[in-house]
Length: 119
Image 1 (cartoon, rainbow, N blue to C red):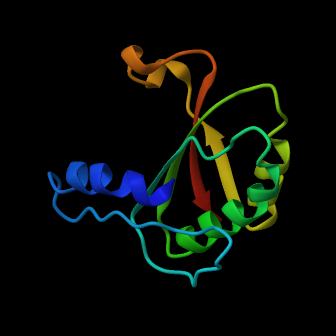
Image 2 (cartoon, one colour):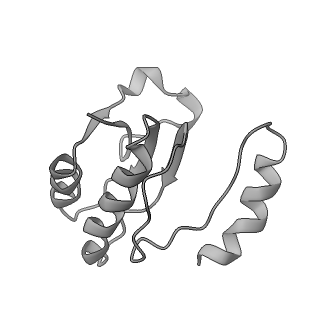
């Protein structure tokens, strides 16, 4: 589903200077690179727990240069603790952003937003 999302994401990014959009295959390891901000949403899906470790590895590689990742997901019934353990094992901290700091029009109890950085 990555390729079908790219045109809209690139169109939205074109309105901002210095913003680029890339398709990353989490199963294809990447070298560390310098990024300022990574935006990730809806990446923890039911039945896809096998992708938690590759996703954590990809985020860690992108943050090694000092950037920050804002990671948003819907808290469903599955356990996502293994994803956050994988991040921590790769030197990435994840801090939940308090609901009161989020835009009230987009804030619902089941949506979680984290700020992630490499330590």
